[in-house]
Length: 260
Image (cartoon, rainbow, N blue to C red; front, side):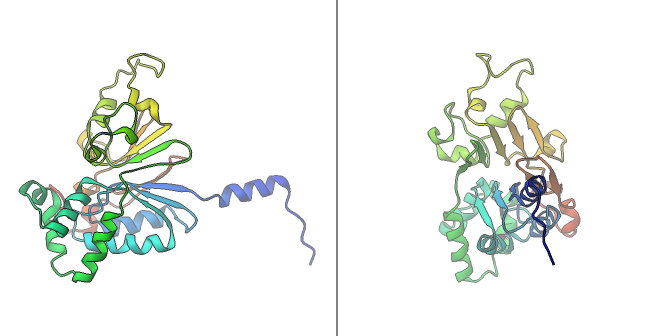
C-alpha cells in the first residue's frame, strides 16, 4: 500500500485539530459529580492544560472526594491548582482546628461532616495538596488566572496582602460599575485591567446578578456560575471561549441544600 504525503493544508488542519487546549474550571465546592460531567462534556484529553480557580471544598457533600480526584488527575493531566478562600479556611480547620460560625454557615459544615470518616493518612495528603496551591498563574500570553482578584494597580506580583488574591471582590465590582464609554487609553481607565491581556476569576457567584453562564466585561472573565448555589459548574476553553456546564448541581445532590 502506497501512502501519499499529507498536503500542507491537511497537515495544518491536523495540527490545529490536535493542538492541546487550555481549560479553566470554576468553583467546585464539593460537587465531584459536576466536575466529572464538565470534564467529560468538554472532551478533555491528557494533552490539555487544566487551570482550576479554587474553592474545591465547602458546599456539597463530596469535598474529600474532590480533593482525592484532583490529586489523581494531577498524575495524568497537566493541572494548575489555584487557592480559593474556602480552601484556605478548610485547610486551617484541618491543620489547626480553626473554625468560625461564618465559615460553617457558608459551606464549612458540609466539609466538617464529610471529613469525619476520612482516615488520618488521607487528611495528611489533602493538607499537602492545600499547601501546594498557587495564589495566581500568569501564562505565556500574559493571561492572569486568580481566584478572586487583586487590588494593586501594578498587578498580582505587587499585591501587598496575598489574601486579597483569594478574598478580593473589588476587581469584579469595579468592572460591573465601569463606565461603558471609557476606553483603555483614557486616563481614568482602571490601571489594573491594563496589566494583563485577559483575567479569569471565580469567587463571586454570577447568580448574584442573575447569570448562570460566564460573563465577560472588558478583558475580565468571571466563570463562577454558582455551582455552590445549585447552579451549574462551568469549564471554559481559554482560547475559543467555548464553554460546557454540568447539570444544575442541586439535581446531582437532590437530598442536600448546598451552600447558604
